[in-house]
Image (tube, rainbow, N blue to C red):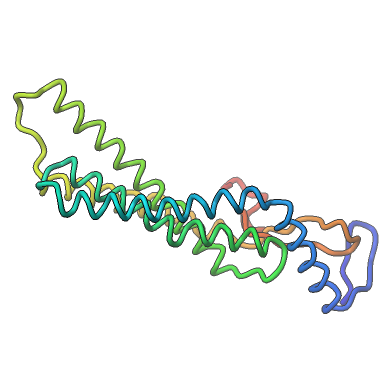
Length: 197
C-alpha cells in the first residue's frame, strides 16, 4: 500500500501499517496507564456507590422530590459507570488502530448525554432547594412533578446533544512513521475544517 506523507511517499504493506498502528496504540496505552487506572477505579467505585445510593433511596425513603433527584442521578451515573467509562477505556486502548466509527459515536452518546442530563438534574435540585429555603411555606414539588421535570431534562439533553453525534468519527493524525497516518476517535475529518466544530 502506498501512502503519501507531505512530499514523501513510503511503500508499506497493509499488514505492516496495521502492525505499526497496533504497536503505537499499545505504547499509548502503556503511557496512559495512570489515566486508565483512574477511570477503572471511578467505574468500579462509581458502580458500587451509585448502586448502594439507588437501593437505599429506593427502599428506605418515602416519595419526595429529593428521592427522585437522587434516584435519577444515581441511574445516570450508573449508566456512565457501566457504559461510558468502559467505552472510554476501550478508545484509549485502541487509540490508533481497530477504528470503529460506530464505537466512536456510541462512546460520544454514552459519555455525553447522561453527563449533560445529570447536569440538568443538578439545576433542578438547585431550584428545588431554592423553593424549600426561600419559600418554605409555599407548595413544594411533589414526587410526580419532579419525575416529569426529570423526564423533561432527560429529553432536553437528548435533543440538544444527540444531533452532534455525526461530528465524531475518524480523525487522522500524523504518526511518527513517515507515510502513515493514524486514525483516532475525535472530530470527524470531513467536517474537521468547517465552521461546525
